[in-house]
Each structure stands twice: as C-alpha cells, then as structure tokens.
Image 1 (spheres, one colour):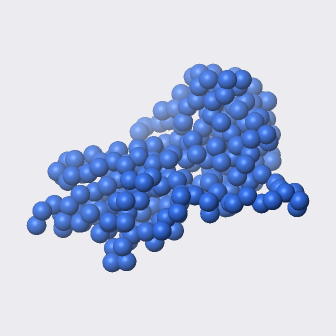
Image 2: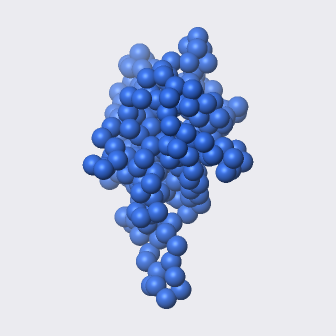
Image 3: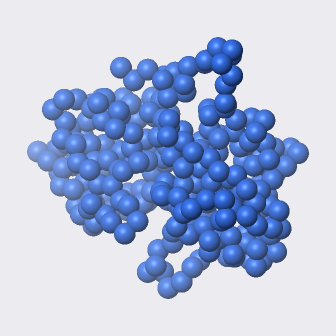
Length: 267
C-alpha cells in the first residue's frame, strides 16, 4: 500500500470562520483527524462522517496523549495510506509543536504539508480591538511563550532585553505565569504604567478581556484559566475606541451579526 500524507493544518484561534480555505478543503477530504484542545468542535463536523477523529489535546499538567504517541499515530495512519489532518489551534509553527511533528515525519520518510493558520498572537488582540502596531503607539512587537520547555536547562527568554527592545509584547499561554512575567518586566525597567490586556478565549463568544497596567493587573483579577493571551504595551489604550467584537450596544442600536455567526459559511 502506498504511504498516505499528513497535513499539519492551523485551525485558527477559535472562531471557525478563521480556518483557511485550504484547511477546510483538506478537512473535508480527511480519513483521519487528530485534533487539539483549542480546535473549535464545529470544525470536526466538516470531516467526512466515516473519518476517524482522535483527540490529542494538552492542558497544563495534563496531556491526553504524550507527544511521542501523537507522532507515532501520525506515522502509523499515514503508512496505512490515509489522508491525515493534524488539526492544530492557531498556526502549527507558532508554539504548537508543529515543527517537532514535521521533524518526526521527515525522519520517518512520511510526506507532509504545512497549512498555516491564523495565529492567536495576532487574531486574539484584533478581536479585542488592539492593533499590535500603530503609527502613534508601536512600531514593533514580539511574540513570547508563557511556558518554556523545562528540559532546556533554564529560561531562554531574555526579559532584560525584551523589556526595552520592542513596543508591544504578546505573551501566549500567559494564564499561570503572568505574575513572574510582570515581575521580570518591572525589574528590568518597564514602566509600571504600561497598559496590559488579558484576553481569555479570544475570537469566541466566551471572549473575556481585562485591562490594567503592570502595576495593578494582578490585583484586578484572580488567576484566569487557560487559554489566555496577554498584550503589554501602549496599543492597549486603543481598545475602548476600537473594540468591535465585544462592544456594548445600546438597546436602540441595531444589533450587527456576531462575528462567530457571520464568518465564512462552513457548510
């Protein structure tokens, strides 16, 4: 039997309408779908009824499947001649272990294709009304993981440089490590008045946004449960003017369609 192929597909950050056209095409022709925790369940309905769906989600402190087992599943189903869609939240090559999975496939001689997705690093702030760059506020940004591999022998994020190197910091997986990140930035000279936004379940109808500053953000909220994206920088000041997805509406104003429902139809 000829070997199949594995598609590492970015599912986007939550709104199913943010899945790319290429990703949707592949999903509709999949034999096997191996999907992550942050993939919108509505996307699974797009796979053929006979397709095998396997949950491979990860939560802090609990992995339904170890990464080595996920790699083995991709390999095994491809060798059976299957079209395998590895459906990953956001973009597969942005803190999603997509690079590791691609390495494992390459080492095994399994054909694969990477289908980029809309990263939560850009989409979640946008749905909260926060542009990462703006001529009046920010000409640079950096995307940082809130969780580093403990096997690397120590943290690799140079917070001393990060505190001053870029205007806007976007921290993914920031829920549990925010106190340490705030302390590092303050210790390395970032102003306590720097605006901060914490966005939970961004781009979905459960989206929640809390704003403050480095000085008070930890007092404004109890620890948020994942997934949380933190945006740190003056661009957060634009949220109240630019918020659109979760903007309050008066009773007299006509309600516009919710973005989750007005996205590109999936059927």
